Image (cartoon, rainbow, N blue to C red; front, side):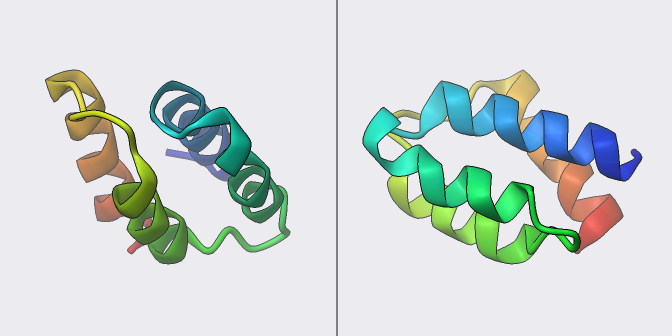
Length: 68
């Protein structure tokens, strides 16, 4: 997974699971030169509004594998 794919996948997950009024902070972090993946995923788990689908859970596991 490239950095560009990481950013795209994180934006997808945030758009799907994070309430709209809390997304700006996540998007700011994604746009940083060095993406703080662990922090983003930790905060994501705190604010997500529903259970993550299996496919998206696999995507999160892939992100952890490559970037954490």
